[in-house]
Image 1 (tube, helix red, strand yellow):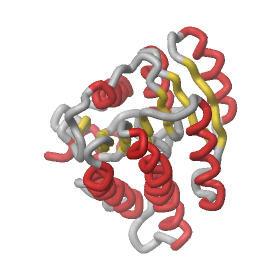
Image 2 (cartoon, rainbow, N blue to C red; image 1 turned 45 degrees about the vertical axis):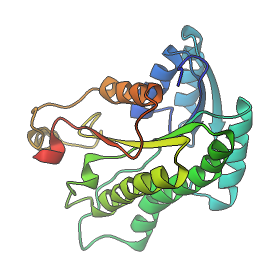
Image 3 (spheres, rainbow, N blue to C red; image 1 turned 180 degrees about the vertical axis):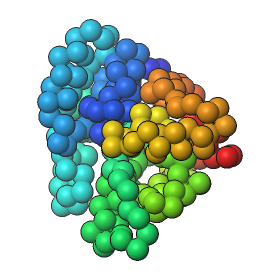
Length: 243
C-alpha cells in the first residue's frame, strides 16, 4: 500500500506514542484522522504542527468507551476522507492494579477501552474494508500480553485479548484485509514511575535500555507498506518477551 495519500484513522493519536505515530504518518504524506478524547490542547498543538508535514490532519473527538456513540464515531471517521485505508488501534489506559485490590470498575475500564472499543471499531470499519477489497488494521499491543505484569493483571489480560483478536480478525477478514499487531516493550515509561520502577522495566529487557517512539512508528510505517503480512505479531520490545 502506498503511504502517500493513504487514509488513516488512529485512535489516541494526540499524545505520547500515538503522537509520534501520527507525526510519522503525516511526514510520509498520509491523510490522518486523529482521534482524541481528553487531550484537546495536545490535539490542537498537533494540528498547528501539521502544517510542517506533507500529509493532512483532521481531529475527531470521541469517548470510545461510550458504546452507544461508537458506530457514529466510526461513520464520521469514514467520511472525513471519503473512506479509509488503515485503522490503527492505539488508544489505551495503563495504571497499576495490585492483585487483591482490583475493582470491577478497574476491570471494566481496561476492557472497555483497550479491547471492546477496538473490536467494535474493527467490526464497523473491517466490513467496509472487505466491501472495498482492501484495508489494513494495526493494533498497538504490549509485551505484557505474553509476559504478564503481576501488578497490572487486568491491563495485561486486556492486551492478551487484543492479541487473540488480532489473529481472529486476520482469519475473518482475509484475503483482502491485513491485520497485524505490534507489541512494544518499555517505550515512554509512565510519568508516575519512580527510579526503581524504571530500572526494573529496563532490566527486564535483553537490550537493557528503553526503546524510542520511532521504533514503534517505524514498525507502523513498515506494516502499511507491506502487503504480504497478516495475523503477525511484531515484538518491538528489546527482548522483553524473551526475558
